[in-house]
Figure 1: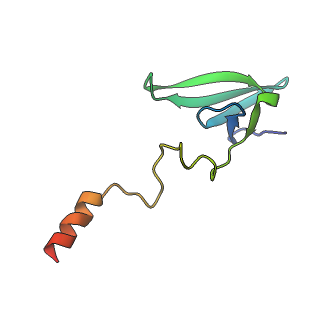
Figure 2: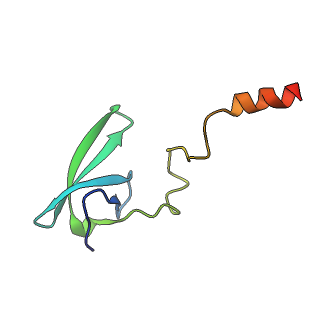
Figure 3: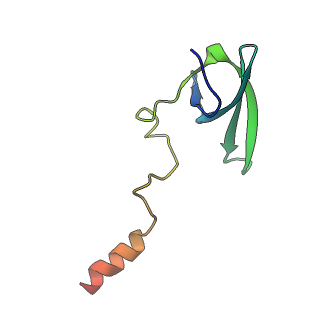
Length: 83
């Protein structure tokens, strides 16, 4: 599989979504955010160990909020009480 800079990928054996930074000699340098460390990290992974990120398969494990989720649930509840 061919990857390009900016692609979102996963390690086939699992783990967080990774952003492709560069590809050289069948090695892909990826960027990801480590919740545990609270910072961005880089990893160099062989291309054969990566696959394209499947957004639908990652929905259960994906901690990122969707565009529809604006975090105003409390505000919505207050509107309901006033009505």
